Image 1 (cartoon, one colour):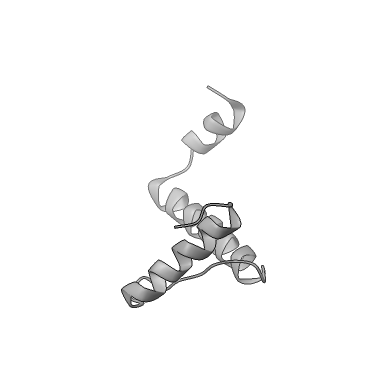
Image 2: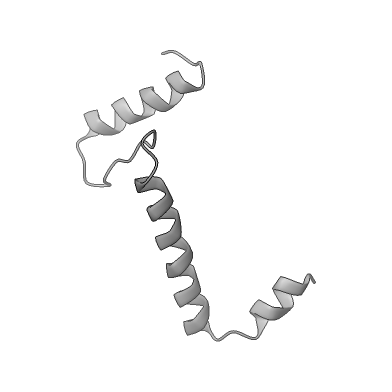
Length: 64
């Protein structure tokens, strides 16, 4: 068991959940501050999701 795993094992489920929320908030903040980020709301129309997927694939050099 690593040092971080030992330290985290002492946290309560509520503390772990709070930590998880903080990490997610940090990821969202980094994504929103990245002008090249592809962000799609989960309730967006399928066409928006498809366009986002095309954009990501195109950046990786994959064309459909």
